[in-house]
Length: 374
Image (tube, rainbow, N blue to C red; front, side, top):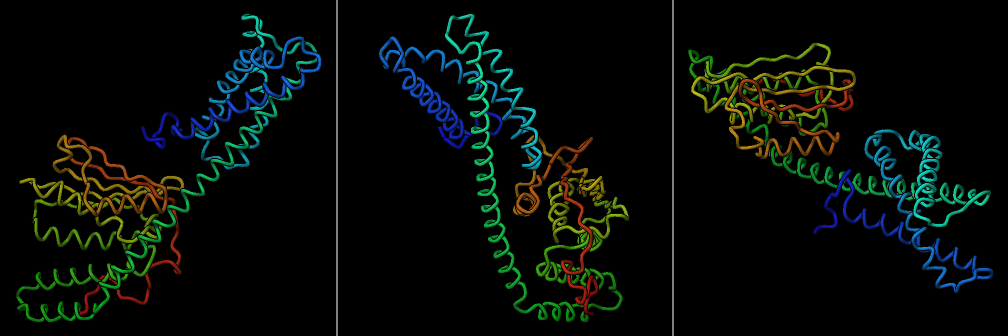
């Protein structure tokens, strides 16, 4: 059994054992403290007093753990998106609720089963110790959560740096002699007879694709307008191959054209829909790219009317989708959703926070875009 496996609510076996260990140690220390404080006037030997207090203390801390669980779930699962200050302020209301609920049940059960407890003015110690234990344990929980999130953030930063290094290496390989590639396109285009103008256009679009990929390797973001234009040229080349079997539709609102997103993010999704969805159908199908803004989120969806998942589980385990999934997860903490389209096909979607165009991070404007050097 792996200690890092999740038990429930995102708690691993290791974390559960640590919490139970903390409660066991707290109960033990509390019993020792009571036994030592009572030794001068206790009528029984200290060891007998120690063992006699075990049932009461087990009930005490067992109920504390029981009432801690829902508060932990609320603060660290349901309200995890809240800031630390907001959750600290919430403790002002949760602390008295915890004490009242725990004391009420603790006293009722103790009286019912005949276990001794504090009475009269002495019960103030139960309130004081209970409140102190609440603050200590949740202080530990918050500190541990902060440490764990910090470690995960560092791991993500390391992985992003590794991806950046790999991207830089790929870009260096692509830039070994890009002008040679463009000159080859020029040479091929010049050799095409004038009556085959459509072939010239396809070569121009292919050159534009390579040029945009080179530009994208030098920038962290691109506008939706540029990405859509790039995807459009890619689909034009695919339409030249599939003819009337491939239908393309763009549903992109004007208000998102200047929004930013990582470059080369849409093309792998569109390619997946064409290759794995539409290509194998005799009648072909449609690929739709939809980008809309909802509140502060940019909703991106690539759908097709292709063969669908075919009962084989989640489609798209290729390198392109795997890289896109990893980029979204590491850069934005966003998941790539793959669901079935109706009546057939697949929908690939994700959401990004809206980011307006910034000239400092956009693809360099001094480089030519989508215009082949012919």
